[in-house]
Image 1 (cartoon, rainbow, N blue to C red):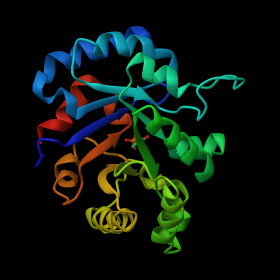
Image 2: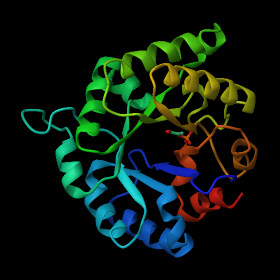
Image 3: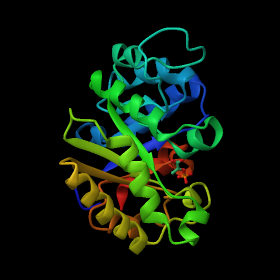
Length: 244
Ligand code: PEP
């Protein structure tokens, strides 16, 4: 890993109960030196957040939810309040993950509201964008990213640094990460788009990052970190990603 600020973000998805989350954080705390812990961020399912919070209290790890609502409270059965996330001490929150789009029909209008709500509470949104296999095959990837990014970023005036996780849908959970050139081209493209909106970019790549490919992927210029699903579930394996 070429930068000291390189981020490793764990998306546990709907895995780990509170006890498992505690054990995981206890184990990875033994592996990661204190001064490197703020390079690690854990996104846990909502029912596990209290346990995560308690274990992370003794560490410098970042942590947060995989989704939130855009209102602080009210009649929104089953949702996570961004205000409560703030009160709990969450540092980050995933927004617009492709599984939210696929299974819960989230669109850019909704995602933008969530981003605004998180920024209001000074929680860093990690905004996921990416094209699907068909869009890539048709040569529409850049256009799709333009639409997603403009839809989310327009009218957001009050921040100048933005964390984007580029996650091509076809690379997630497929054991087939995007090629270095594809990631690099997209990083340049997204950087340009963010510059035109006068925003600094923190660029993460996500999609089948694992111990075998992490070295190659971490060499790509402009990549500031990874969002990792499957390979984040085991603390030793996840830690190993930082050892390249
Ligand atoms: C993800 O779900 O954000 C992800 C990148 O998953 P995986 O690493 O398993 O492809």
